[in-house]
Length: 169
Image 1 (cartoon, rainbow, N blue to C red):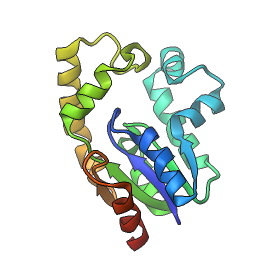
Image 2 (tube, one colour):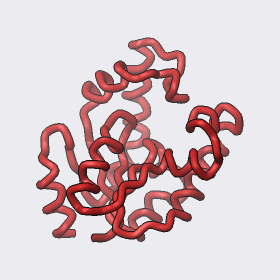
Image 3 (tube, helix red, strand yellow):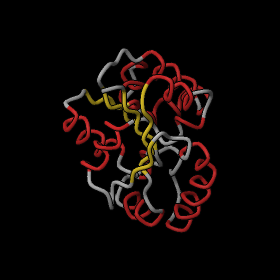
Image 4 (cartoon, rainbow, N blue to C red):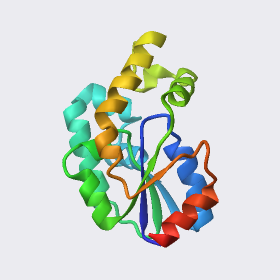
């Protein structure tokens, strides 16, 4: 099985679903955010962004992505990863890119139950601000997300359906 890169908006389930998919495919699971945190020896992405800035983070994320030594792995990327530099094309040249397409309402309800302060882009947003942010960012990112090899809805489709699509690709 080639590398499988999961892309999609924050709250779409890339990490949770990615672990299940990796288990199903008998592959390694790699969370790109965790790899960035380990590389830069910080407590989390939030710390890296707060101390070095968003531009530094995007460059670091791209560098770590391209230096991952992985084979037979499912890699969960950050929500913005495919939108910067040549990351999407790079991922497509190394494996299969799967867009976890989840409805805005589902994303909103999931993110409302998380600690927004831990997510730098969402810090300080109220419910209306969060809803607006999700809508605007999703619209901005859709051209990148739609560039994936496979579009999959983890809410309404079964994991076995994705494994069949992956095997056929």
